[in-house]
Length: 329
Image 1 (cartoon, rainbow, N blue to C red):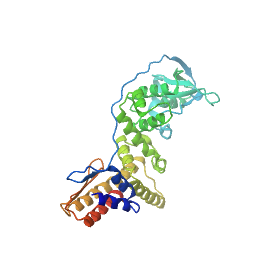
Image 2: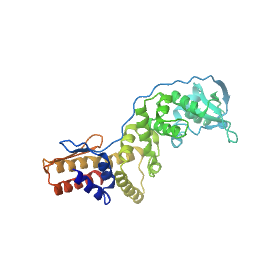
Image 3: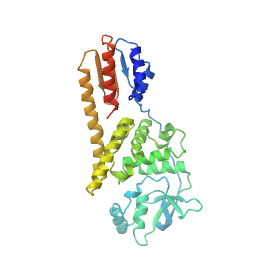
């Protein structure tokens, strides 16, 4: 096995660099099975709860004097008259039923108040002629405002889980929380959920995201998490980028567009269709000899098992094929 690992290390300089480095660095257990398991990321443990209580003064103010806070959790692209018509109609008929939360804007800002939460209500009032905005005023700092916004919107059906994931990561990256554990405790959610949310939010880091995802509210969290997790693999990411380039050209050629839901389905199809094909190819490799077994589990973790009976050159050939199947789209 040691000879084989050294050979893989040399091979890594050619096409399988990432996997070879991982295999060599593992220092696999010297047991009879000769099993090598590739590492995967582990999710964290549960965090503790924390509550924040505040006293507020209530004012009436013209919505034109307000603007969304820099850390608000709404997708501005989604915030339009059509999507808010139900709320505009309701406020026009019966008035604003619950106040929003605002804080005095920083000196030099073009508006008087930052809208901490209630951005949709602010937008609806802005669309109604001479409609005043009922607002609670807080003097809380940024960290406390983030917690207040989360508490207010925790059960809101108007904010999608992906929007929450996206805003949570922005809040964490603000530098106001010392660690993911600190953030999880402050927001009263488990650390494992924070990890999943941050992973899902990585989907928005891709250069093509804003081009094809026009409405973040239509991105299911579980799909974003699965896709973003897969895109951490550089080979998968390269493959997806190429497929998206083809998609872009096809849409341009046909003078067509693709909506957010269809684009997410497109990503799922090209990524996980490839996973199924990859598993089939690995199964075929395992069927070639009883002395070599390779499989891909539900976490996309690759296990290679080489028995001592297998001739070294044959082992090299099979490992090479397995690594190429695993890492090359």
